[in-house]
Image (cartoon, one colour):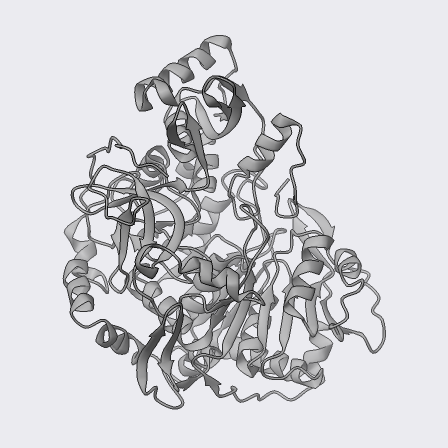
Amino acid sequence: MSEKQVTLSKKTYLPDPHYRKEAWCKDAEHAYQGYLTDPDGFWARISHELEWFEPWQKVKEWKHPFARWFINGKCNISYNCLDRHSAGSRRNKVALFWQGDDGTTRSYTYWQLLREVERFANGLKSLGVAKGDCVCIYMPNVPEQVIAMLACARIGAVHSVVFAGFGSDALHARITGAGAKVVITADASIRRGKTIPLKPILEEALIDATTVNYIVVLRTQNPKVSLLPEFEMDFYELMDSVGKKCPPENMDSEDPLFILYTSGTTGQPKGIIHTTGGYMVGTYYTCKYVLDIKDSDVYWCTADPGWITGHSYIVYGPLLMGATIFITEGTPDYPDPGVWWSYIEQFGISIMYTAPTAIRMFMRYGNEYPDKYNLESLRLLGSVGEPLNPEAFEWFYHTIGKGKLPVVDTWWQTETGMHMITTMIGEPMKPGFAGKPIPGVLVDIVDKAGNPVPPGISGQLIIKEPWPSMMRMVNQNEERYRTYWSGPDNSFGASDLAVRDEDGYIMILGRSDDLIIVSGHNIGTAEVESALVSHKAVAEAAVVGIPDEMKGNRILAFVLLREGQIETPKLKQDLIYHVRITLGPIAIPSEIRVVDSLPKTRSGKIMRRVLRAVELGEDPGDLSTIEE
């Protein structure tokens, strides 16, 4: 990796002062200095806002690369998500609103959700599931998926959630890799009005999966799918066959909570292990102080629990806060591109946390659909999953936020478990910049020798100190875990390139392995893609490096045009010129191809290796994570 100068925009939006006045964190800079002065004291204060069955004795123990947090503390995250609210004023507060693909709605109060979780937890226990056993959850985005996750946590079972869009090979690898004892699934998922059978996929995935003893099936279709006696159980029949009360398991802070496999875009999927106490504190803290969740909010994270965003910011973090959460099985443009905005109006959603991929998709349709609906209930917008390019920020801020709402662009990873970098509420917002490290997080941007780079120079993003919700291990692969903590001065290498401005704001440029070396210059794919998307005709873009005899590599660009735009030779020339003006001649694509879609993972990340492999006539490798 060589460093280079990056031209940074100085455009800034100043939020209305009342947002900072009303926020949980009213002065991020003061809070950050407090963290630097006493890191352990900072996290101790956060942890005391949650309930512990037995108090921890020490905040952390750090023996590189292994950490223990809230040592010897005993707790249960399901108890903190449900029982402590049900016993108080939130007993009859709605915990969860759900909207099905077909328009069906359901809701659960905290007391009702607790009762469902207890019954299903007892059902799992009746199947022989005990503390430390692994349960695989392969379900669509329905309330029963949340119930299953919390039930596992309640009895100390380690859950491994697999996104319902995965095929049988990917599912098999995750079931066997985690050694799942029980698999929970549904007969089908509903997508764009069509029924997609899940049980046949699971049946194929179970071939040679010797650890699995039982299958639990949520049956939603008529006629009901048949079950194999003594091996397959109906979800609700299992709940009806057991008692209603299930006391929470006494969990050590460092007991495993879940295994979650990464999407595998840059290699084989890794089973990331998170533990109970530190993850609980980290997700609670960021939901409170970054997403600013209040008792009056209806909160919507548009992700799926099959990804870390869903774990941390659909299920655990918001419920730890006592929030009312909204989830939906539907897609953002079915039955039309206005459906998401109709949900905001119908349910009075006040916090929307979504992905740049979705924002750019809506940009293609313009303002027509959001302008049809009353979005006045919104008070906070959030972004997650990939860098929020300036053009997407502008559309989100002006069209959805009406030029007044805070936009919280968050950088973090499956491995971090919680937000690490963002613009806290009340701070000036800079399009294209995620923001600063949040209080509790210490990061730097360094060159290949490990030296901090000055503002305006790109480098490798590293995390310098441990944090509570950090991953504890890669399942069955300690060596792979150790590589994460092999950065300069034993830091955590995030594998992302970044640049910082004079005010300390950080812009994520893209993965360090998403580089194209052209004539000896490192060109970040994210930079070229952002330049293309900044053109008024382009909705999305992906660039790859293709071997070139003279330059080493040349840049090949694939673009999706906005609705109403037409491919012409003149437009392609305009795009090339636009990149030249934006980034300079070294970053000009040698060719631009207009396409109808781009290969993406189900978490919305573009799979550039697939584009490159197809172009070169090579094997594209594992496609199990691809959306279409």
